[in-house]
Amino acid sequence: MRLIHQVIDDLRAGLDGPVSPMDAALEELLNGERGSLPDLADRFTELGLASIMASWIGNGPNRPVSTHDLRRILGEERVQDLATLTGLSPDDFLVHLARRLPAAVHRMTPEGELRTTP
Figure (cartoon, rainbow, N blue to C red):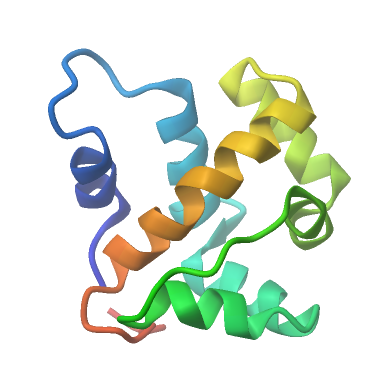
């Protein structure tokens, strides 16, 4: 599994300057104090959305995730915290996250599998 720092660099390819607030939120979500990619995958599974996460990890096309489902997965408090980190409203944050999260997860799992140990 690739490190989130490498993924953010890939997603920002061609951009100059510091890490954006949205990049910081992705890093916090996928490798922060309050969770990791395996933790996020577990939440997708718990809510019956494992096939969406599996499409991001696998080598086929990435299925979209709705902002409604992201709100359920993350919980209102986590959405608010991450939105505050980005300087966006919670609704705007979820729109941006729904666009960027599938590619970030896909790039973190180039072998098409989620490893829970280093």
